[in-house]
Image (cartoon, rainbow, N blue to C red; front, side):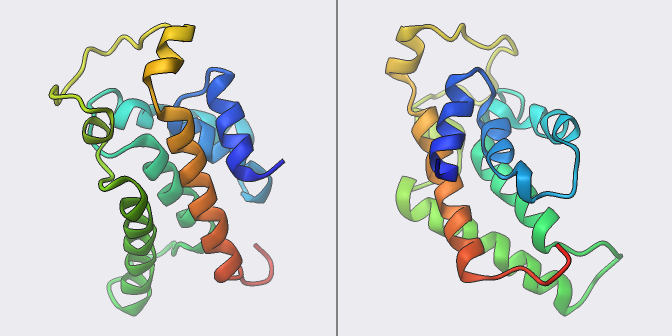
Length: 154
């Protein structure tokens, strides 16, 4: 199963968009799956249903941070290189979807949505592109990782 397929399956199993993508990469990450799911739980619905940056995009950034990120109070080239990586991932996602903003992808005018998520019914899945968006994010990140091999020990 590809990471794209895993992300879609995760979403269809009830995980939010951010959790779906992070979980698709959990085997590569040096963090317990339960902790990854808790960490990414806040980013669904464009950050807690605020409809801002898509949770799938936030998940790409979290995974990239765990795989390629720095862990000190960096101010120079290390930080610039990592931010360039994040901008590249955002650009690749924008090329596919035109934006990284949840509400824009969903065609919503509301900036801050009610905190209660919609029930995951057949109708919900018919009107929401979220499973495919999560799949796209996973595919973009997987391709990036293939193009940018990890250092040994990660």
